[in-house]
Image 1 (tube, one colour):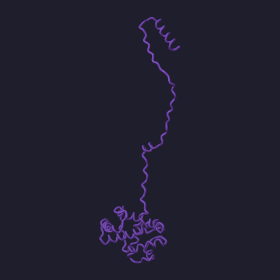
Image 2: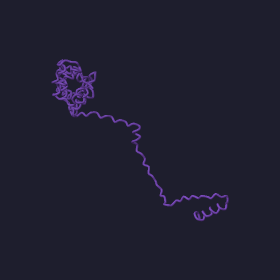
Image 3: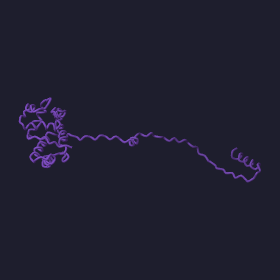
Image 4: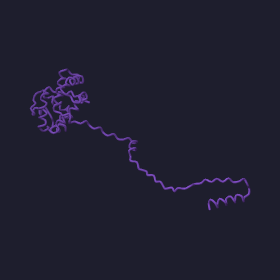
Length: 206
């Protein structure tokens, strides 16, 4: 998470400042001279540039980012600001998902403990945050969807469609089966055996 230490003393002018950003063209590089051109000539206004960098509106070199350009669209400016606040002040949203003025004390305490600043500076940080919050619509920001996990090899094998195996049963005609046991007499007379097998052939086979 994150919690920027950027703040301004002229937090009451943030609404007008971002209105000027939305109304004018993005400069090639956002400088103090550009601040003066927008009508913010005081030395207290210089802190607006580090704040824009903390919000992701400017690169570290002061070049307007895609977020800066997107904010200039009035249809999505509040959504863009909400995204910027969630990135720059992520630690605060862990404490309170929808911060309000009633949370001012706990917000100030978080700034003071995180950045080891005085009560006065922590108050200015909190006021800067709440002024920016008035320019955002947190309801417009949806949390990123988790990426779908790839199924394991074993699970993928289980999920593969299995071929249906149909059992083919051949019709078996009904019938009777006999098990005949013949006990031959203990004799060496071959004629006895011939007579027995002849009788079997006539009555069972023939």
